[in-house]
Length: 106
Length: 115
Image 1 (cartoon, helix red, strand yellow):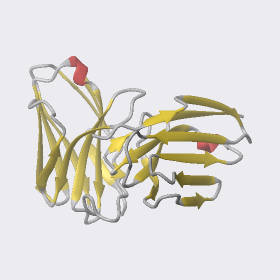
Image 2 (cartoon, one colour):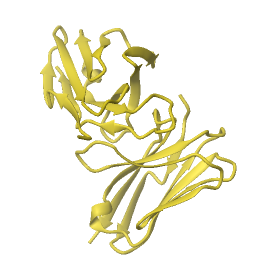
Image 3 (tube, chains in turn purple, cyan):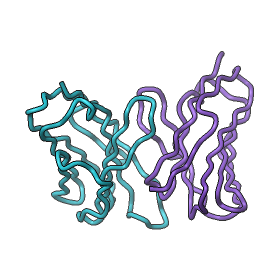
Image 4 (tube, chains in turn yellow, green):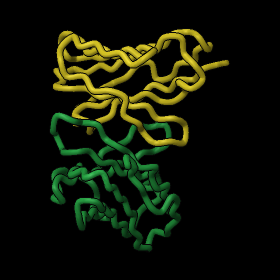
């Protein structure tokens, strides 16, 4: 399957700070999905991006798909303790990236 | 009902045992998936069923045998597993496979320990 790398692997932020995770591929992607997995939980679908340069927002979360469709990012504004978890990107909804584990310090 | 259920929640089995994991959804989804997830790692695709037919087998060892008896049910039969097969086994479903709607709904998983 397609390999996508995510950076950073871990991120610790103070509550209220912003957070960004990046998903990078060496090949052009036809689509990308983002999932969140809380500690001890299962992945939950957040969003899908398919168009070059696409930007989608969900409240404090902003998702971008790169112009070349080789990378994507998830940005959280003013993190809250409820944002804790691991954020995964996925390709074709089958192949998951390495994930970024977010810790929010109250 | 947007729920995918999995049974059992936990399973401990010896290397010579035969056991089965069960997954069920009643959302009318026609694609169902098995993933394996080791601690602190991403879910790793094992199998995809589309309209009750096996569409993808990601070179999974034959000691794992999937079965899709109908559109709502997905089983994973386990036989002669190794300790390194211990992991969280996640089932997921989506409306269709490789359609416009990619959203997958995951079940809570079965935590498997092979002794």
